[in-house]
Amino acid sequence: MSAECVQPNAHWVQCCVCGKPVKTCERQEAVEGDYRCPAHPDGAELNDGRWVCSAGCYSAALEDADEALAAVWPEAVEGVR
Image (cartoon, rainbow, N blue to C red; front, top):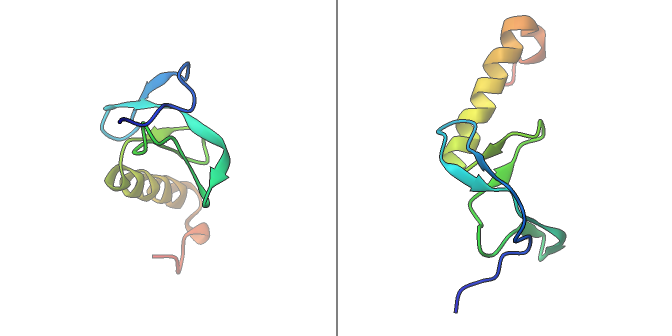
């Protein structure tokens, strides 16, 4: 038995890192602290509204954001790396 999507009408977008399709469905209320859709558990939304398809792309997106921030505001990331 396959899991049902919690938001069947949610849009599909491209992963901001690799371009793979990601369904933008999320639970409205957490189940054991988890908001992910049981039918599409790999997608995750970043704080800036972009979506990623995997843990690897999540890490890459955060690294890119740190590098972009460091380019305009180096003091913001000093000591973080």
